[in-house]
Length: 293
Length: 234
Image (cartoon, rainbow over all chains, first blue to last red; front, top):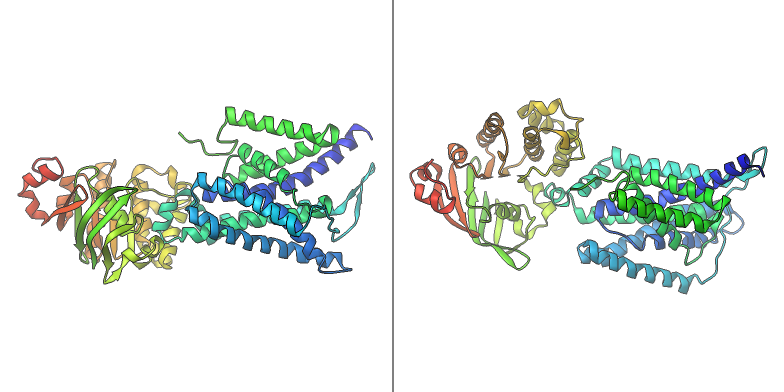
């Protein structure tokens, strides 16, 4: 294949990766931004979304589209409930202390991973795509479902933006993010806001996993890469900056896709990690993060 | 009205308030005077439920505030203007006011009445709070608290760092609130400004309420001002 079509193919792969990464990292960024909690278990919520998608999809035999739609709704909801339980049993008891919650979420990571291994097993299992069509370019054909993944991610991100910028719930979340104590002084139930944000963050990771699982397969260790890439994205974008998260996700996702196609996935991860190091040295607050004195 | 009885408060293991008591009636301005670190700000935070009360009681019209969670307290009609304003700097003026209005479910009427007290904010509704001047930020901090339609207003150094004209404006609003029956607890360093509007003065020292006097009586007691605040006669 010539360079031009090869670059187009790589860019399309990068766009799919960027869309899924943006959704996943948005959840991590939201949780850190509002709660100041670095959720190391975020990748496991992604993994649970994929594993539950496989389970829900297999409830319906002979109709992959219906099974996938049930998974798309059911998996994020179950993951959201699990996040609420984790918030109630762990994070709230630690008073959302930033250091203590890092250790606690590391513990949650291993608990969720081992639960998946115990009940789901070590095998990678596929979920059938809800629709199967090809978009034909002059040089190659490309999966239509991947375009749907990109479109769905964009719609979901717009939905999150609308929630934050245009609704009372979003206003309450932003006020809590800027000053927790003053939010309480104005009647905002901060603990309930935190629980809701933690669940929303986990659900974003889960829905990203449901979208990608027809392409990637569900596996109990599949949360590791999304966690690493999400951290890379939120550090480059600026911790807590949703705009920065989306921009960085597009950049990292596209470069990951293009470098993976032309060279190797390992080189893509090396360059992304190097970029994080450069950002931490020269712009510690990230590209869009607020600079503090 | 608001009754604070023998409260003890701690930051970690350090006791900050030791059996502090005070009360304020509707339409009364009570000023808390004391040196830095005496416990004035902590007293306001304890009333708002932002600092836990380990002993003693705080009640509003017989309802125990000290048993409530922090978000429940403002819903009973306690407005708080903290030291340093503590605005939601990234939110717009309108959004800051909306936060106040949401607390007790008040709407356009309360918003318009509040903006009537601070007309300059009406021209800044879509501006980010953090970009306002110091005086405008103080007005917004007061307006945000007044959007709760409070029966008790707690003001922590509202004139700190403001120009004289702005101080006069804040003072006029506090006086007009007294006429509307709002009880005000005012923490202020400027003794002269305080004595011109306060009804009573409570001197606080080392976390204890030492003496409470009518404001006019304080003018005749420079010894108290010297002892508790470190200033001479005013």
